[in-house]
Length: 59
Image (cartoon, rainbow, N blue to C red; front, side, top):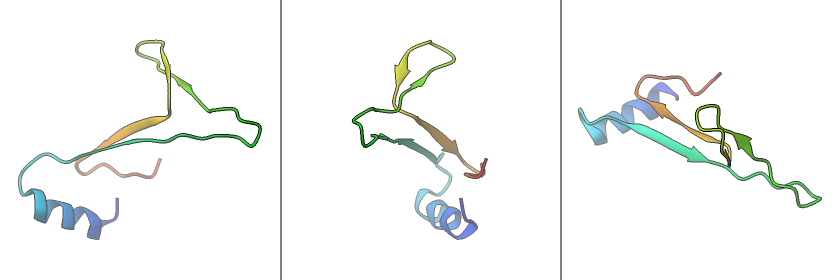
């Protein structure tokens, strides 16, 4: 997350905890959907995740 964006979120949230959640759907031209298998539960679902305060989006 850029420092500017993080600073703007902190101004609005104050000392509240900020967690950004996301999910994405990826559909191929042949109609297939990309799913991921969760390591913790073994279930299948759409790719997604979360980003907590002061964690970088780049990995």
